[in-house]
Structure formats: structure tokens, C-alpha cells
Image 1 (spheres, rainbow, N blue to C red):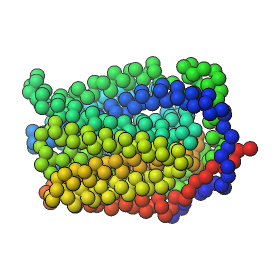
Image 2 (cartoon, one colour; image 1 turned 120 degrees about the horizontal axis):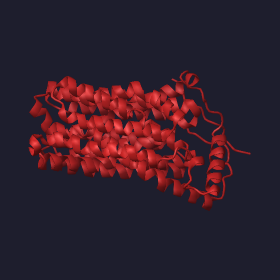
Image 3 (cartoon, rainbow, N blue to C red; image 1 turned 90 degrees about the vertical axis):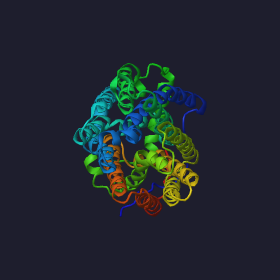
Length: 445
């Protein structure tokens, strides 16, 4: 298997004055990160609310765990087919047009899901949710590379991506409260109200995106002319320090490094999607059946996950190291999954603590992973490559929930499937340690 090439070791390149540059990036962070953070919270809530509504939806509609698992996972097929085109379009027409389209689209699909009656309709809408959301996550990753140099990106990635964990903090209690308090209102079930109430804000946020988001630093009127100049020079310095990077998408597809990263991220996403869609089921299986209680337990776990993502990203930037930060986090996630499976029947408290560890480890691996593609991809190759990695790897988001649902239906147990997912995440750690070498920047003269 191919390995990631390592540039020659050298001293760090000279950068613009730290205080002025830090002020510019601070303004960028306060302007951009909170907004895209909110968008990702909305996206994540609308994507994973099926994990909570299934607690009552399946019984009302007479569906099996296998139907749910397929429906939860089929979302990622939409991702697979439409992510690369979406990211290439973002590079061509800009972020705000692309993100506006995506956000409004998934909001309307979420609302439409409240009227689902058949498994076929459920599958179609979940696929359509994936189609509309495709491009958002890799698009934001690409978008942030326009605003931050490589040594500042892991922290930015961590702050943005921690929104998925915060969505777990918000989404669980919100869904549980809606299901408990809105059931029967207007003749609708509680799970139907979840889709309606959580879908409307996304449509509104999509409209706001057009007026708020700025595509590139040079277009940012909210930066001073001097700040725009400093950021431009710093980004040029960073690009030069990274050395030659492939800019052709077709050429990058021949590079074994991109396929190595796809395999690594596939293993991480298998664990992440399993925890996302079956975490509430684990909580229910160990004895907590009230939807609101399940939501609050998952909220605590995801709050820990959010802290882990930001901390790991910040630490990665501080030490200028991504490889071990990703590998160790993935190993912790795998250990948490295995311990969850082991103690589900023996000790509910240990099982829940282990699931929290699994969420923290798995989610903390993700921000620093996205430092790796930028080491050798730029331009169109970066736009298409990031989307390609995410789209193919997210097929694990289809396969893992389907597998867990099928195993639960056939055996009545979640633990065998969790052991399998833990082994897959262990593979991510092995691949990183064995095939991804340490990276050091080149000198800039």
C-alpha cells in the first residue's frame, strides 16, 4: 500500500507579525465559525433525529430494526453520488450559493419526513436527505482552507466539527421533549412533530446564508485592507511551505495516498455512524426507556465529545502533529465500543461510560484527520479529493447501521455488531501508524 510522502525536514518559514496576524484570524474566526457551527448543528440534528424518533416511530408504523437500519444508512448513498459534484460546484460558484441550496434542501426534506407511512417512502426521503446534504461537510472543510493556513486549521476544523457533538447535546433532549409533550397535538404523533420543528430552522438558516457568508478573504469587507493583505501573504507563505501539491483531480485519483486516506476515514466513519444511529438504542437497552432521559444521557456523552474535538484540534495545531493525534483518538474510540459491547448486560453504568469514551475518541479523530489531505492536494484536486474521501468513506455510514440493525433483528443483541465496529476502528489506528509517516514543512526562502 502507498504511503504519504514526507517533505524534507526544515525550519519553520518566516511569518508576518504575530499580533496583527492573530487579530486578523481572530476576526475571521468570530465571523465565520459561529455561523457555520450553527449550520452544522442544524444539519446534524436533521440527519440523526431518526435515531431518537425510532424509539416510538418503529412501533407505530410496525417496522423492524432492519428497516430502520437500512433507512438510517441509505442517507449515505445520496452522499456518495453527489458530494464530489457539489464540492466542484462550490469551488466554481462560491460557498454561499452552494451552502444556501444545501441547507434549504435538507430542511424541506426533514419536514417532509413527518408524513412518511411506508418503508419505501422512508428510504426515498432518507436518500434525498443525503442528496441535499451532500457537499456541506466537505464543502466547509474546503471553505476553511481558503481562510486558514495549515498550522491553524485543525483548531478551526475542531471548532466547526464539534457542532456535531453539540447537536447531540441539543438534539437528544429536544427530540425527547417534543415527543413527550407534543404527542397527539393536531392529531400528529410526537415523532412527526420532531421532524417539523427541527426542519423549519434549517430552511430559515439557508436564506440567511446568502446575506451573511463571504466566499473568500479578499471579498471580506468586514476585514480591514491591512488584514486582507496580511492574510493573503500568510496563505501564500503557507502554500509555498507545503511544497508541490497535486492540483488535478484526475491525476490525484492515481495517487495511492488518497485511497489510503479513504480507507482510514471509512473505518472512523463506521464507528461514528454506529454511535450516532444506535447510541440511543444502547441507552434504551441498558434500561433507560423514557425518550427524554435517553436524550439527556446522550447529550452528556456528546458534550464530552465536543470538548474532545476542540481539545484534540487545538493540541494538534500546537504541536504541529496530526498523525498520532488521529491514531490515538481512533484507538480510544475502538476501546470504548468494545467495552460498551462487553458490559451492556453486566453493568449499565460502565456501558454508558464506555459509550461516552467511544464518542469522545471517535469524534476527536475526525478534525485532525482532515489535516492530512491538504498535505498533498490543492486547487481542484483538493475540492474533489476532499469530497471523494468523504463520499466513499461515508458508505460506512450506510453499511454499519444496516449491519447493526440486521444483527439486532436476527439475534436480539447489539453487542456482536458493536464488537465488529470496534475491530474496524482498530484498523484505522493500524493503517495510520503503519502507512502515514510524520510530516514536516519545507523551508521558505
